[in-house]
Length: 111
Image (cartoon, rainbow, N blue to C red):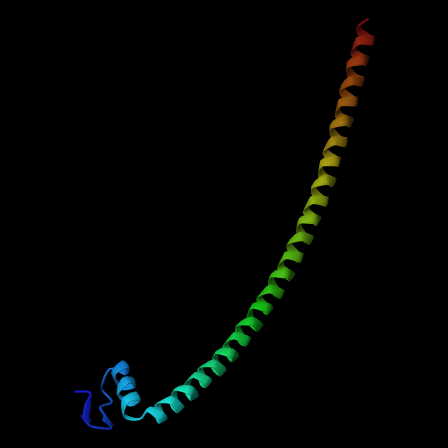
């Protein structure tokens, strides 16, 4: 049972029915409460949106810092890799020179 007497609403009723009944019984009060509720929801929503924007900006700042750190680490790794590659090429060239020198020595000794 939703309405026990005209103007008295059973609080165990369904929410939609309660709102419809209040709108029928007290249209001015319902309108005022509805506008106040909408204003409160809008105000609360605006606060939540500002908080979400601030959180997103903080998250974006952290991502930017992380991106910069990753780029710096990648640059350092690339530099290190190039240095090791150059060292390996130098060692290979030195080894090839020694082999070539030995080969020439053997050829000149045998002849």
